[in-house]
Amino acid sequence: MGIFNPLYDVVSWIIVQFHSLYSLVFDKDSGWAWGLSIVSLVVLIRICLIPLFVKQIKSTRNMQALQPKMKAIQERYKSDKQRQSEEMMKLYKETGTNPLSSCLPILAQSPFFFALFHVLSYIAKGQQVGVIHKDLVTSAQRAHIFGAPLAAKFADSASTLHKLGATLTDVRVVTVIMIVLMSASQFYTQRQLMTKNVDMSVKTPFMQQQKMLMYVFPIMFAVFGINFPVGVLIYWLTTNLWTMGQQMFVIRRNPTPGSLAFTERQERLRAKGKLQDAPAAVAKSGSGAAEAAPVKRTQPKRQSKSQRQTGGAQPAGAAKTAGGPAKTAGGPAPKSKSSGPAGSADKPNLSKKK
Image (tube, rainbow, N blue to C red; front, side):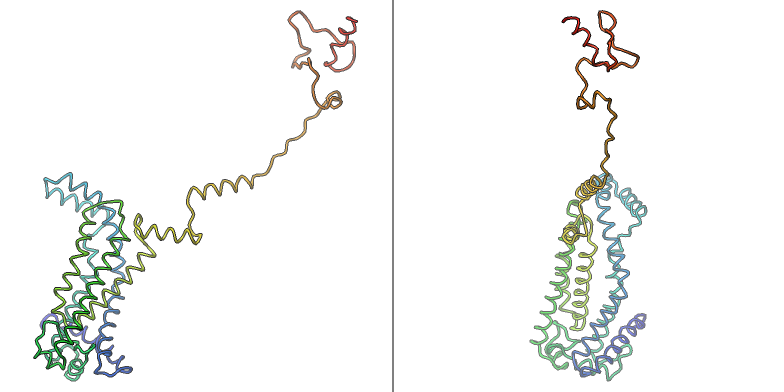
């Protein structure tokens, strides 16, 4: 096994520890004890990969945000591939984006996937591997999942399966069901990402690439799945289910701005009263300010004695001037003989006429 011995030791040691735990509840030679050990291996690995998953989400969103700029660079330097690559790298450097970050979780768990593949292959051959000694190898060979041994594959011959204590029909039925579930979960996870968590207002080559992967990955799993042992199918199916649940949580709680999931989250917050539209909020605050503003009272003006007698209205013909009595076009205004207000200046004229 060479340089991969340390990795085989790690994977086999983790499986053995979980197997010892589950043997307290189930039969140590049962498929439950060994199958749950593989499931627990996946859960442990995925918990350790959560920081990489968060980094993958950020990288994916950055890539989506950069798609318009990337498309502009491609159109501008479509005849100069070298300059196009240089501008792309410059854009990645300026924005701090790494295109490979979206693949980090898959790349990080790939060594464990292949290590488990080889561990199960050695178990099928009856050989000791890692810390799994001869007795544990025999116990793992006896473990069956719905009649299919953990080390059995769809492509195995009837004679090989007979040595593992299984029939060709049982193994193929179980492996086909698991391959279908594995491919379907992969397709649903990718489709969920494309339909709910992508800004559909921007049409970019990145979206076409993701749409293509949505159909390519399930086909790849179906093709390669016939050569995977049942234990590896359990591993990968558990990984897909974990990814699906993790992605559903992220899409619901922290969706990409501009996506369908983002709109749905805004509607949920609005229905709970935790989100208000900007115009409505402004109108509400404006009306509140108007209601809260104090009403200014107008102070009454001081009135003369004649105004109080006539109800506050000035008599017709009265005139106010800043410097003295009003003048007419024919000469100075007639002077009043009475000591009353200026408004009674016409009374002497009326008496003369009489």
